[in-house]
Image (cartoon, rainbow, N blue to C red; front, side):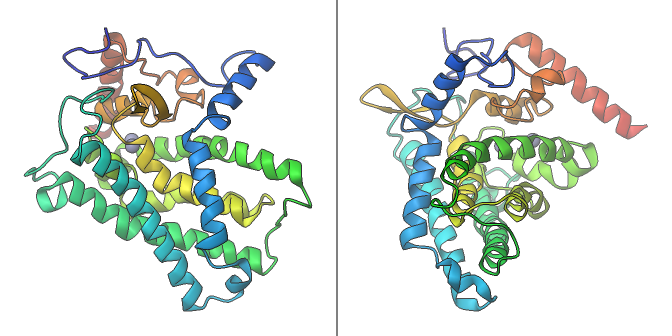
Length: 327
Ligand SMILES: [Zn+2]
Ligand SMILES: [Zn+2]
């Protein structure tokens, strides 16, 4: 049974643990994990392919980034704007406007909110588009531009595929893991009641999420979330890594917030999109701060496995957090 009164669809519960950190690591599990993420048409593979194409044909070359001149900065901003619109807009169009997949594998029973004063413009999608396309794209571009400038001037270590082929490939595999690690801690900070109230509640207007919800954040949250990119200021990388990372954080957030578990093609699950794990976070708040790949929630007791007991535990935790604030 994968439906109940709370959910139109949910995966098998309690949720399984796909983290590579939570078990004595076996070569077999690691090979399976690599194959799932990198040898299928996964979110990561798609974003890497887009990154390679965008690096070759869309973004300005690194040499252009030696000075802060308007041309290449505007070009970078336009590419980012276009990519966020294409990916978030494309998913929204496919799943929520044309409803190509109906309600199959859709987590929430409900549609995106209209005529709801909670949202700016009283419309969830317009609210989400506004925050994604203004502060979101601007800050994404700002972090990228500064990083490119640092690279172009040799202020940070860079590599090429020829100089370090192993690290080049390894860094692509490690970047999503780094960003999951960074996201967990930033996200925990954002759930400190004061910051939650003034900053993070904007992202949490979206209990029932859609593709445009992913990158819809308060400007302070965008800043903290995107600081993940500062890793390129310390660890040697190539502009392709930066672009992959930019896409992972920006347009990639649309993919993980689609509101559907997978994209079906001819009734076969072809592309993993949203996770029930984060969907639970949007409904119950004080649980599942990280994503499935990081073990933190399990280690620190904030894991919600989708069952009623977890919901009860989460509600108690929330009460405790907020009662502290009032006294
Ligand atoms: Zn979210
Ligand atoms: Zn949150």
